[in-house]
Image (cartoon, rainbow, N blue to C red; front, side):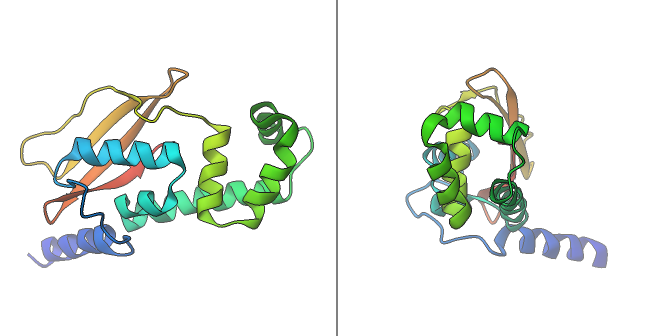
Length: 167
């Protein structure tokens, strides 16, 4: 019994800790609605909206990825794969975009990432694997280039949160 209580408390802390203000207009009881809102927030580079949908752990993971990208942009290695992608995707004005991303915070980094890896606002949904009574759902989706990614949602207090976001 104590182990189960500890697991429930850990789950609650992971879901509720550090989540942003909830959007009252969003039907977060529906996993597809949360998935679609997540994809719109990523497409639009809307960090404020996106962090409302993430668990604490998912937010920390995404922030870690963005911080690593920011660090690599701040000290670029000429000819590196990252810089080749930046130059190819952003063209002539890439220096200004890099400078803005490096000087900014998470909102600027998310917008920069989306510029590097453009995506559809409503990507191809590959189905949901939701078992009755389950508190998790895995939703595969396709990027415009055909690459499959996954979003995992976790349910707590009747609301779905993103617990894993593959970009």
